[in-house]
Amino acid sequence: MEQFLIYTLLSALFLIVAAKLLTSRHKNLPPSPLALPILGHIHLLKEPLHRTLFNLSQKYGPIFYLRIGNRRMVVVSSPSIVQECFTKNDVVLADRPRFLIGKYLAYDNSNLGAASYGDHWRNLRRLCTMEVLSSHRLNLSSDIRRDEVNRLLRRLYQVSAHGFFAKVELKSMFLDLTFNMILRTISGKRYFGEEVNSEEGTKFQEVIEELFELGLTPYPGDYFPILQLVDYSGYIKRIKDLGNNQDELLQGMVDEHRRKKGRRACPGMGLAQHVLGLTLGSLIQCFEWKRVNEKEIDMTEGRGITMPKVEPLEAMCKANPIANKMLSKVVI
Image 1 (cartoon, rainbow, N blue to C red):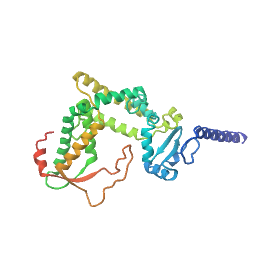
Image 2: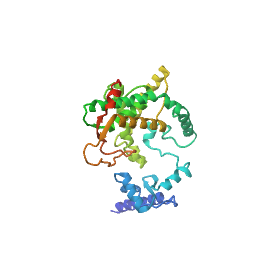
Image 3: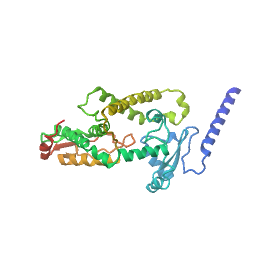
Image 4: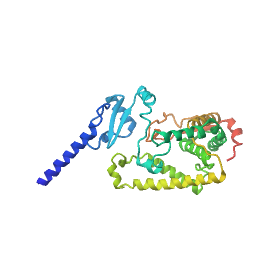
């Protein structure tokens, strides 16, 4: 009985000291909800996360502080404060948090998206700006974008060329369009779409799907490092295997690029602007569009960095007379 009391008191003392250390290091912090010892504010973060953070901002103000395990974060919801963060304090906030997935899939956090702010990151950014994302480079790949948009129009034309509206699911088509534009620019190959059935294309699709799945799955070990000692969920093994598969695919592209001495490029803001205008303009000119029914389109948000819709976008499309002449010349 005495030993039990001693262990209980020691455990309680440990929790109190740990909580004190974790909460008293930085005095000049924004307002914060009451945190649990060790765990922090994890009990407050419920899905959908952006709505939870909005509700907290209504109570604690446009800038508040949260902690999950050993990770500290500041949530900003005021446009004026956000602007100040990205202008006056951009250097202070330009760094990136280090997660386990970045170690195995971003080459120890050394690529452009995960690297810490410094000379290495500035060199990568300068290289991309000058050699990859310039207007000249984007113009060189304009034929690829035009061809992929024509393929999308052809797919829509095949299901709506009978003079009636046809129901189509657009999310998968837009994903195929985006990935094929990027991959054809990089490697000259198409890996997505109904007509792609190669073993290499299938493997690439599997890598991309698992990459998105793991990237959107929070790993407790990133917030409580002691959990990394035991890979209880198999997460570490999965990202290691995915990293090996990713390296194999990318190395194959590099080897083929060297053999063909081709041209390599990469997506960016300029590419997105080119693609968006070309795609939307073509869809509007070639097809008539309307809703599937009289109900309002469900705009409920889903999980993901880009806040995708829970229900994929579906619409009714019908080919315009002008599409018959134009798309009959499109050969896939």
